[in-house]
Length: 156
Length: 156
DNA sequence: GTGATTGCGCAAGATTCTTGCGTCAATCCT
DNA sequence: AGGATTGACGCAAGAATCTTGCGCAATCAC
Image 1 (cartoon, helix red, strand yellow):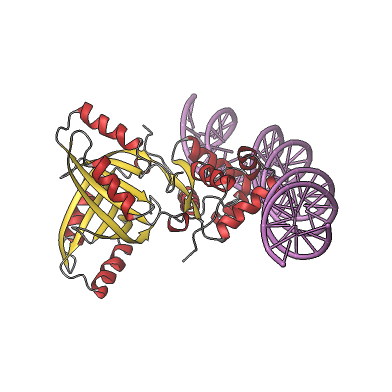
Image 2 (image 1 turned 30 degrees about the vertical axis):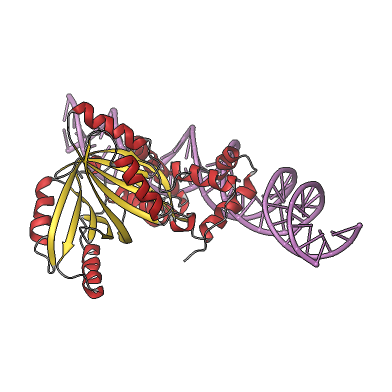
């Protein structure tokens, strides 16, 4: 899709600040990156319009909301045809426990990032939904103990 | 940390909306959840103060920024003592290619979410940094082909 | 039934957003 | 080389939003 963006130092500063606090006011942002508010707002809008900033999201505290189990599942399929891959990808979108998912290459075909209120719910999901899903061959799970790093998507 | 929050239907609506667009104005948010702006702002501030909303983040388009390789690494250590785990966790924080990391239980000890400009850079990282890091036993990588689902952290 | 508590909405001042416009520096084209 | 063009900045002003205090109604406890 988008051609590689050409960004100057101020653009990178903006991206860094908005990754750190996506709800910062434009006035504060402009102060931090060293230009006045109007051109700063125009830069942010340009970054949004070009799709470099895809969206803004509030990050929630899962345990406080009763979601105590975070886990990853590596799923291997029996058949990896285009149709089979698409069918499984569609299925992940209908499982609320699966919060995000990637098609991957390697020993497995999909990586699922899962969130469940408790271990029983998660195990039931793995056994009764995931493992018993058509075309699913192997499922390896990794329960998270704690997150040890959480930086934004892009560094620099 | 936080006691399980007790949230009513409006709070959940607010959380859903701010996960979908974390930069929405409070006026628009209040309109969507069906109350006037001042109590809506007070609810958002309460959710922030109680740590239910942890932060706001701009999500960036990695390929547009020259980051074409997204991968996961499952890392197994030789020794899993408290000190060893902490040592490896600290090391992940100094690797810019590792964007987020979890300590996990299962066949591996750590899950790393990695981002690199190209395959060569990623392979060099895996071979010269990760695999050759002290106490690292096994490294299994899964290169992502594409993301097929990306919902917020908490559903409902 | 009465008092306390909680949360809503209104209103007004402060702040921020947004747009148009003038200026300036850098680049491009003869 | 020199004038034209482009692009981006900052100022200013009107519009929108944020923020706070306050009064009122509903709920809860006693």
